[in-house]
Image (tube, each protein chain N blue to C red):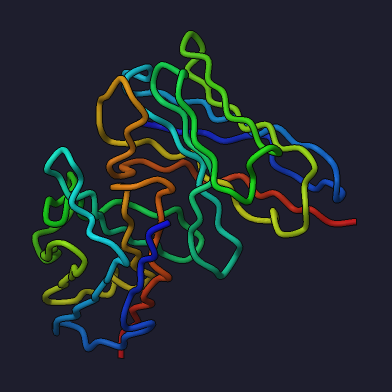
Length: 123
Length: 112
């Protein structure tokens, strides 16, 4: 199993950034994918998730209305579109695979993580 | 949202000795499907987290049997026996019974 994030970088407050996660090594369409972020030196925060079929999504309150998660099961990719970015969104963003097979949004546990994409929001 | 509280915040352990980390949730983690979605993760500096234990006590593939999990309802523990140098880092509990998924604040384990 491999999860490879891309698209991180430096952006000004109020700007936008799109993260992408390319997955391989498992039946991609059967598993929910989450984005989890971590401010360097701090703890983990679950940001968003999307079901295997892509029809169910979830967002933490702090990013609702600003972030959009989507997936392309033909390309084995999950994207996180981030708009109206704030300084407090600065973090390393991990793409992470849930470990249960379900038609719904099922995370259960996170068994594989990408290496992370750093996002810095600063003027 | 369910709040996860870990103790201790840090722990210094002698090589070969045991370490125990506790995690308490603000609500029961028993899901209506009968499972308890409480897992434990380990993160070394500069690395992503890796799964150790899922559904309270199930070791993930490749995890040594020095790691064991227990608990029920709102109180859970991770025990590491015969601590090795590679066990240093930060340990997190995580609940996925109710969304949003939430994590404990972490327990940093160091070697004396």
